[in-house]
Image (cartoon, rainbow, N blue to C red):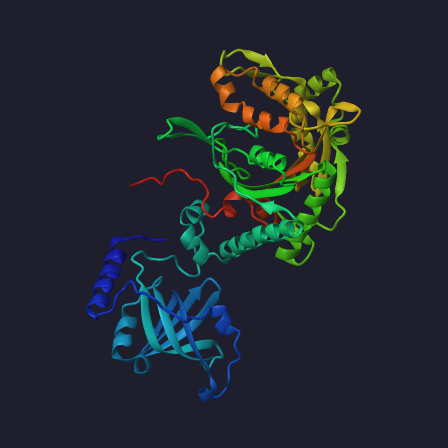
Length: 496
């Protein structure tokens, strides 16, 4: 896309000339206009006298001048259609306006809806209305907007010139609507919980820090929805969910954006098996709504979402793909070494190298060797308890946590637990987690009020979290999370 000064001068000159005609170049109210798709669905009578009138508003994407006739292609979010402007039909003022139009301008057109001699559906305009002048030149209709970063930065143009972007945005809306309808129909209550937290809890992630001036209080943008939703379980809301933005001050990648949309739900008197069944049914409902078929393609591979989905334990998958028993400390360490995984990590405070814990090496080996094989949909369940300190233990197996993660095409999509509702164990676990932190960091993460809430009695429950952006990536075959977030975080644009 070019931004040459002469283009800006030309458009500014046309703006001035439109004003000289006594026409407001920025338009105003334009009632009773129809969506272009709605107009195109109408039958077209062969007799002019029987052809309906149509009134549309849209952006000029193509313009051809043939003597005393202008052909415009107007676009709105539902489609695109041709408008013919004849000098005799629109009169002197309308014709003068037509001569000062540019690609990208927004106009209203009204007239008879019929077909040209070549059979193209067309509005034969007898009235034109200026709605907004575009002072910046638009991309070529056929070349469009190609550069990925520019598409994300100029999303407003990307939506206009790349049909798949607009389609994906609409599919995301449908996806979230489907999730709400499914959960609401099953007795879940949607709530809103605070975005500003006094304590950065609910997940192991680095928070964004802000400050409340009136209270002189440091606050954190939430990193999870969990702890407030569990308080509502204590309060008697047995089925509760929230769809909201969460913020993690961490890296950006194909699968990660610092602010993203999470759906978390909790169901009293359920467990992780309850959540497994719910997750499968919920995502199948989303697939049905978006695609109408249960076989979708992602990155060139077909995924069959037809239930029942595969289920496999963490231990079983680790043994199959890593090749050792994850409880064998020596074998795990040796396998990590042959896999060229670092066996020690530098302490951020002292700078000294510290040997990695066994459970850390186990999960790094899982990520390194197992995840690529999880094409799925597959539920990976019964995680090592050391990896899930806030999860209820499996009865008779204190080293196993009742947790699952859903993997599809090697991407972790959902995470669920049988929730820990024992306040004593919960507090002990919190304390152990915070033992290595400074007093300031410990205070920032220790949620005493949540422990107090548990002491009043939280029912046994299952909890589930689904990353909406990743689910949208998967169901719309998007290569990057930036393709499904309308405005992903980007570096500031460099100024000349």
